[in-house]
Length: 392
Image 1 (tube, rainbow, N blue to C red):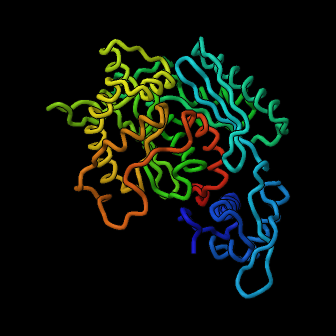
Image 2: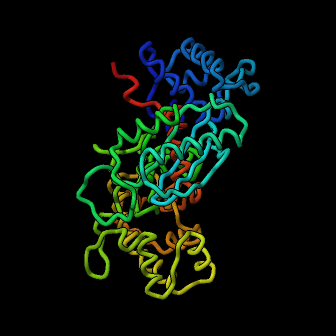
Image 3: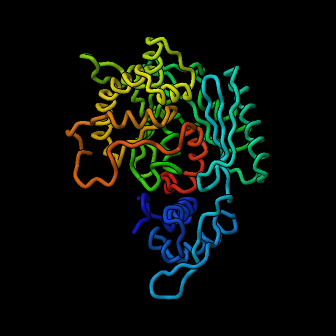
């Protein structure tokens, strides 16, 4: 039987060594620890192949022996677990005026974090800031820099020239290949670039509300409103990496069709509060208004619930996720109230009896979820097999 959330079995061909390592690590990670025979059954690999891979992973420091566990009728066998500090990942989120960063271990725990102002949105300047933040994170933890296996850098979407307008981002439209190359040169690490919603979805799967889920959708409150969709453990990215721009999808509101993020987003909330004579500049400002029960905020939640419900129903019918998660740069209390006010319709594949999860729930990785997602993208690649691994 395959490990939970792992739908790609291993292959014994030599050319798929990396793939098989990921399969083995993924099985162990999903189960919290396993013996050799159990790994072989879960992965579809031979016991000898599993033994060879385990020896290699122990040598690399990615696995550790975690006592003994009973498997079948025989004597207890050695249980192998992930070594949390066997590898580290650096993650960063580049916002229009701020850069946030984190250092993450193999279990998805945040070991260090930082926040720096961004005054010049020039790729060379940003690359140097990222290098300084990486160095500071390593120094703060006292861990060897050689444990770093990669960096995940998060940018607001959409990427490249598109027909979408109205996104409130002051970042220039950097050529992604140039940005990746320049950052790799500065960091001396392999770099993954991703949009904020996708990164946030990966963070939730590694260390948040989507742990153990293989298919889910994540609605992200960031610069605008984005959507990350994970299907059988893999992000749905689209041809240019722009899948999930749900903020630009038309939804019914006050008798007309409007872009979803014109009603459901931090920008939309800010406009409603400004109309009431209130200015907010941070998530903390919104949280204080929520704690005080400010009527303009309460009105916005009621106003946003209808369009958001329509969007959730559409997401369900398009992707059939196990659940739809709300998160990002919005106070937990506001997200909870939005979820409580939403009424996704019954004409949905998700409106079925015996559900294990609610149709809509709040994320658990906090306001830095996209930043964490940058590092989680790197960690996830260690555990998640890719179809490309098995191609000739």
